[in-house]
Length: 182
Figure 1: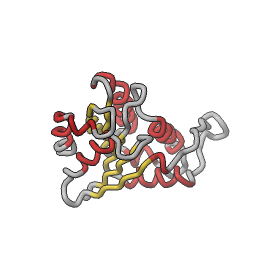
Figure 2: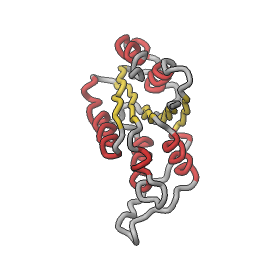
Figure 3: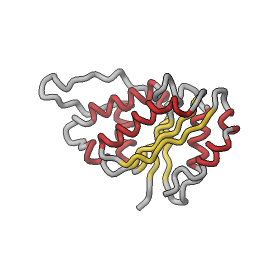
Figure 4: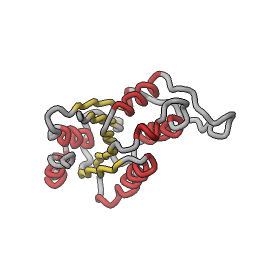
C-alpha cells in the first residue's frame, strides 16, 4: 500500500524552522511514498461555527478552502501537522483547521471519523525555550489522534527562534532523519 503524507504547514512565515525540520524528515521517506504540502495561510478557513445544537446538528458539506482541506485530509494515510510552538500550542491556523474537524464529523455521508480511524497523525514543531514547553501542543495532537481512532506517530521537536537556527540543533536534525521510520 502506498503511503500518502499530507504536510500541513501552520506557520505564518515560509521557510521557518518548523518547515525546515519537516522537509528534512520528509526527505527520508521511503521511495514511493507520496507527499502533498499545503500551507494553511494560503487556504484560510473561516472561524468555526458550532452548529451542533441547531436543527438536527448536521453540517453542510464544506466548500472552498474547507472542501480542499477535507478532501486532502481524507486522501492521506499520514497527516503531518507542522506548526511552530505558539503560546505553548499549535498556531491559530492549525487550531482553526482542527476546529473544523468538529463540523466534518457531522457532515452527512462524509464518515469523517470512520475514514480517519487507523491513519497516523504526526507533529513537527520548533520552539524557542525548552522542549517541555511543547507539552500542550503534543497533548493536543495526541488527544486528537486518540479521539479519532488514529495512531499517534509522535512529535519531532527542534529548537530555533530565528530562521535557520534549527539547523544548529544536532539532536533534532538527527531525529528528523529517522522520524518517519517504523
